[in-house]
Length: 388
Image (cartoon, rainbow, N blue to C red; front, side, top):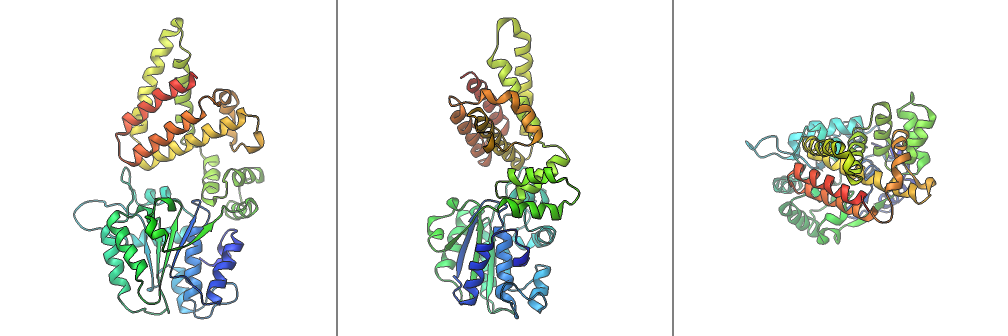
């Protein structure tokens, strides 16, 4: 990854280049921003530029031995830490066990989401974590001399996934860093980090990518897609190239979360508007909701969280349509077909309740609460909210 490959983010790139030119590189930096805005690609492009032996004014040379190693993400002085899952309990698992997958992902595309990464690792219901053993490994690596570069660089992707023991050991490293060591933390949720870690890093906010840059990047990657579809997905992405790519892929296939959303809303509406002469319809709807909860519970936990995030998006967008702000609506063609009739039922009396229930369900799934109970309770709450 070079600075020239970064999508948008011209101001951030210039600031990073200036820090190297002026030899004022903070030893610990936190790249925070929306997932898909480019935090991880920026960290790798920055690390490449720092390690390059013949850097230009605006980018690494691409020809030196260091750059050649960066092409395959195998530079010996750059260490990556990222969430993993333990396939079994027979051994101690660390990031080095998954380096092949990590490098393959970066070579394919450094713009990827946490869900993409967990799918690559075939984590199923497991949730990614950075375990305590990782801190011991990095302490050992940093105790060694640099092989080639003037700096040793540690890139930590999603540090909010560190367990408390690992976080505390990282804090000690940030407080007393080894000589010529740089820590580049990349986090879409910095508020979940220890406040003491936040206070010891220089925070660099990575804004959402401008729509024009996303459009250009999509045109380059999906040259078979039509211009209207690309423009729509660039707008719906809200600054995230990862979401823009998913939008294109969903348009080419089908959104896996739209149908579950439609099913539960239709079933809840049937029950919420129950009348005695429609007793059979109500019974069918109740069975459908129970079946829906069971099917949702069979998803992997990451897919369950993605659905709940998607449901929040749909509720929010339908509320915006209801308050007559269509220019602010971010719905694709398939979603708009359903929402044309659905949006009147999302209004000021139930919008907060819907968002609270969906966010609660997301936290419960994150904390490993029984998914079947979570989704069935969510279905019941949906009935009550549609009655308002």
